Image (tube, rainbow over all chains, first blue to last red; front, side):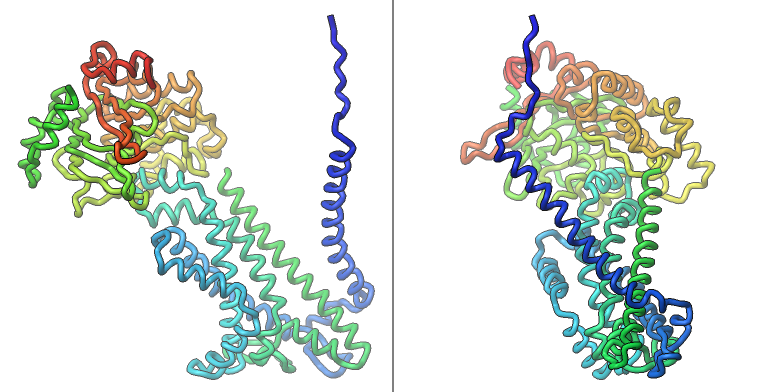
Length: 295
Length: 295
């Protein structure tokens, strides 16, 4: 004897509606965020895409439109952010390791550090610029308006973000890895170095990409550190004067001549391309690291 | 009866220095007289902060044999096995009172190194915890952290350990494959192989089969019977049949509810040869447990 079974949905119209509305808002959010990027890039492209050429990367900033380009600001940005990353990444990772693995949990001192780091992550960038101006450019360090001062300030800006994301990544490593390693006679340091750190790298990398991307677009603190100047040569060391992409773009954009405004748009495209390439490299490195762990 | 015995022991004076207490050991006895024990526990209590997890444990663990800890949940058997290689040190607030002797050395002596102890006394955990590395690298991990073996030596150790854990034939063609791709039972045997690779004297197993199916369990049990020829094994198990099948000695623990509050404390009820525990236990609580009237 067979029974008739209806498999038709028995959801009330209200639930069906809510379900549909939820889906709609999800798609809407995706559309808004992707749409914004598309809109920005396409309007820049329409305005200045035709101007893009290698010439822009070989010419230096100038008041003469025929000779104006982006070489020194591009190289300057790469110097500043590159050195800042070299300093902030290991320091941040080691700080996170210390806080997660070696500082006593719930100990007052480490909680104080934690609170401070979270606060630092929220401090406006321009405040870091002021500190840099007072203590690094002038003050006791007296490095002047140089790549070194700028890299130091950008490193300070990146540190809290790197520390916070690295801690999250380290915390996500299963405790059973540590236990297993220690049960084999590994020292706590060996367990961290050989197991915890490699497992935490993908997560740390993601956060660091974010920090680097933010740093390369940062302009406010560097405004105070002498980046808003016409520098018509590439930096050669930590003690060189420098300028950076965002501020050069700003300077071109604030010129009254229309050609310079188009040039500013071309600069924005270059900056976005650099950002895109850096992210791509970081993602590829992260994937290699992840795959190596899962051979 | 065993309660009286324990009270008596509680009042027994423990001689402070090592030689003296080694002599004393043969007199302190709970259950079987064990010649040349690997571990001697005297009035051991383990606490987490104010909470006493297990208390008044006196027992001796023989070498080249399998000793099982059984009892209901919360009776402190896992806590106790973790004190035997100082894995409990990793839990904040954990403290051990009484004496835990490994041969004639005090495991909790201030000069004793937890790293050295854990190399000699290996541990296999409840949930298989292979590292996210290749099968080869998992086994090679211990030898690598304990020295810098040559590649050829390492190959030999890896093969010997995998053979020792009855896993070699299944994995010899894919030593470079990720350990995470093995089945649960294979992963657990890999963890056993991993601990064999550092040539410990003792292997502690904390419910090694509780995450495995009956066939994988059987294989691990066969392996344990094989391993006891060369190693001393202590196993915590929830499975009474398993204790009866593999162990020579069995310690039965109960959970006592503290009259002052609702805190639970584990106590050793009876420790004897397994066949006696399962046929003619001297304590009625043991009998109720092993015959299935309780637990």
